[in-house]
Amino acid sequence: MKQVFLVVTLFVAVVFSANAQRFAYVDTKYILERLPDYKAAQQKLDDQAASWQKEIDQKNDALKKMYSKYQAEEFLLTADLKKQLFIQAQNLVPQHQLSRVIGKVAASENVLVKTAVIQAFKAKYGIDMSIAKQTNPNQYKSFNEFFTRALKDGVRGVDEQADSIVCPADGAISQLGKIEAGDIFQAKGQSFSVEKLIGDPQLAKPFIDGQFATVYLSPKDYHRVHMPLAGTLTETLYIPGELFSVNQTTAENVPGLFARNERMVCLFDTELGRMAVVLVGAMIVAGIETVATGKVKPTGRVELQHHQMQLDKGAELGRFYLGSTAVVLFEKDKMVWEEQFKANSIVVMGERLGHSV
Image (cartoon, rainbow, N blue to C red):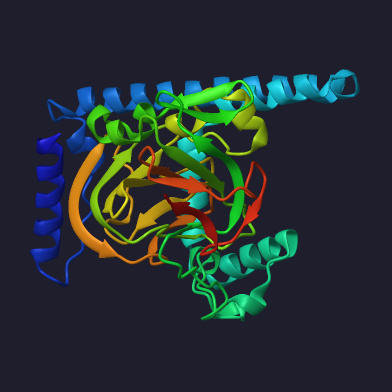
């Protein structure tokens, strides 16, 4: 392959450095086909492309059959069967490819594209622009900028009591409570281990019998994640994974959902000991960003970074491009959640979610 690139580069150099008034036609196909490595390399690329296409065709055929079966039998299906079909479809959809395509659309600064997407999204979810710092949706450069819009000063106050632990984001409580022998409750009949969530046994150890809160950010919510408590960011750990949708159906039917999806683990030293805030991705989430790492570029491998960044309670920690979930963890016997909060409680960033003990 090096020979191929060298020959192409030489041809470009020769043609453009020759007499400027002369034009040449270079039959690169003729030349490349006669290079020793070219045919083998081309065959390898063709085989890989054929393999990808075969996989796409198989998944597409399976989805078509599933959808046809669903249409034919919809009136006979129970709610449970419909959920099972939804979960099966999650496994067939090319999760990462779909999310990356959506990401490109969301990042587009083409006026027609971004305006159409913003207007459709705003209408579907009833977005309240009156609380945004920039109230005119047409002023945003892209859908991503619109989606991660800042709020007006004072719209979200941060609880200032010394013992308070505040909600990291707008959304709804998926679950919260005690971590039982290292297991975090996900939904009825489902749980996942804190070790798998954090991705490192040593880093997970302080939270084994601690407390957790899972906050789901819906599409209509404010999509920046803030500090529940002042602390020093010491590590970030990017963990590649799947990209299942995050909702009640998947929480109840996909084992270990939050410990399987792509995520960014943020770990802190605080006055209450260790704290973790885990930003969990989902299908069509176009990206995760933190103040320490910038926007995460998926590499397919675990990436640990060390930091010494001081962040105040309520300070911005990161943001989601197209939403998902934040999981907050504390050590044992250091804090408790306020009694009024339970699964499905609506929450806003900055309100008192718990307190130290």
